[in-house]
Length: 325
Image 1 (cartoon, rainbow, N blue to C red):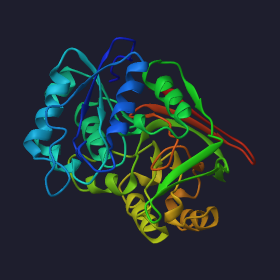
Image 2: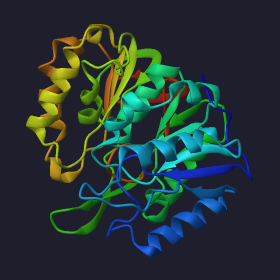
Image 3: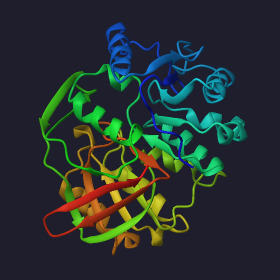
Image 4: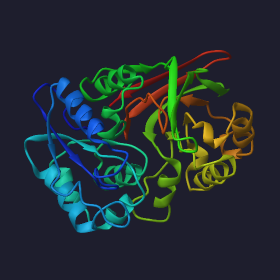
């Protein structure tokens, strides 16, 4: 099930199923720019009632987060829902969500990082395609903004297939140095040749793994798997998290693996990643591409969780397309 695409004049609701909008690094300037940039897209922006509440977990109660989520899906004037930012606790909501309400009111839900848990649970329980892409917060940050908005529009304003091309310049926030760093993109990293077409699952790897063993984990059989992680995930952590996913029933039948760009703090080079991949017998014969523009760096694409992609990897080139979104 795919929600209707956006058009000028549509309402967008901002909610905080993880961390609040009232965080020190979400400055008034970021809030102002995010609102203005969304309005420039022709969208009418409204906000959940509880998005500025902050407790000791930089969030608010399960009840208040659920209220904002349910209100957004129930409101006939809201056509898309954007999350403020990621965090650590979206999975607290999953067993309390009114999935029947969501299924009766299909809408675009977009965000990334910790929102991965919410997105996959909704897809599993309702069949509604959700979207890994920019937060509300992202629209207030200027670096390489055009690329991010271009793919946001391709995925959420249009229904035509589109090809993912690597950004030329990329960047990230260095938490160690508290600065923004920018650098030339090295392009796609090609690890294994082949072609594949299939359903897309996956986003933030460590968050997706939180769903293992629960009723909210989708079946990964025959999917094209997208995974990424932030700078906290070093080579050891990413290796074991990917291994855990590969031990799920159905992992041997995944059709392709697409890996997002790592932050510099991960210290995962192309050579290190190749060693990680080679250690997974489940990945021996599937096309694999990495350093794709999604995850915790910028700019970023928007792609559909539960949608469809195709991939073709040769010796020196690759074609990655989003077909159904």
